[in-house]
Length: 276
Image (cartoon, rainbow, N blue to C red):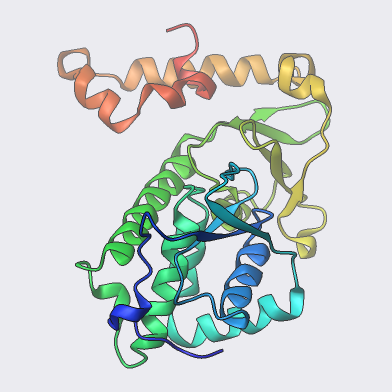
């Protein structure tokens, strides 16, 4: 992998209307994006107008030259190893999980920028448009991760598994698994992202297995989860709702501030908000 200078006009990555863009399309996975980055260098596309898009975001255009990039584990590992040497992989992954259609191109340009400036902390240069875009997405994902840690509400089921549905704006389940595994290490639980159709599962009987991704769950759990409630769950919910009623100081209720701290889009799965 070679580095190229972004500050050389011949290396300008911006798209000119007269240029035919190359669009590298990957399958949407992180490994797929790493493979696309490798492909760009392997085929010397860094100096050309280039976009990297996930397959689910791509729309065909006769002005673009589209290349479907297959996943390649070896090439992805080589890119990841290089990233670990020069950038915070945590930052790269957080921005990637924003699922913004343009973030994959912004991240690629930051990689190029860093390779051009190996002795500089490019992520600290907020004046750079791609760094600025990546940092903005990292901030959004971090805020959503924090909110999911606070707004997940488990419900006790007859299977002995605590179940929670969430609908985050970003794909933050990979970022909250360890938090809940430590906090509820003595319980089995499942958090399901209804937007993306997958969940994370922890079995306290087999802690060595860690937090696992899960896709196939009983459809009834999503459409009528009350059917799976344990006998104690209605009692738990009444107690939780009573707790919130009693700790509320009516004279200090500030609806505007309340919604700012707890946006309405989270209320759907909050026990304390049911019936409001």
